[in-house]
Length: 145
Image (cartoon, rainbow, N blue to C red; front, top):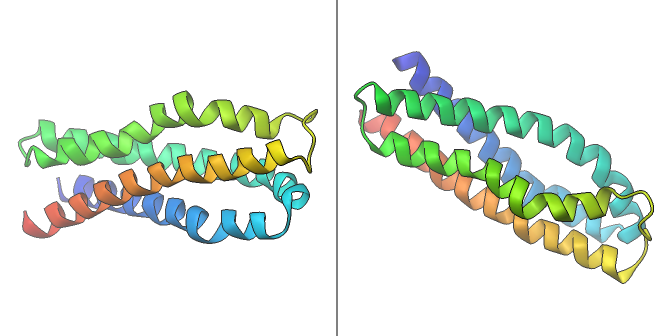
């Protein structure tokens, strides 16, 4: 089960690091460049990040659930739940904003687009926090057990 622990920890910490990077570096830099440029790079950046982060979240959650089901600490279930929940959170709460931002007919420099970009950053911060808590829990469990 050591390999599964490493897989859970690695995929979760990579996800959390990427999520934090997006919130602390990439998205604020986009916004600093103005709404027109921010919305131009949002689509390509989002498409690349979505594929990577969805895979990492699923892998990490599956490994955490597997560990919990095979007799490891029940805390693995909590970490797995936290990292897994970023997926439905994204589909239910972030996806409507994504669709508006990716709509090619939207006014690129509008106040509404700027507000949507800021809202997206705030929503994405939830993913950063949840995945960071899961990563900390996973690392703790990997060290303690």
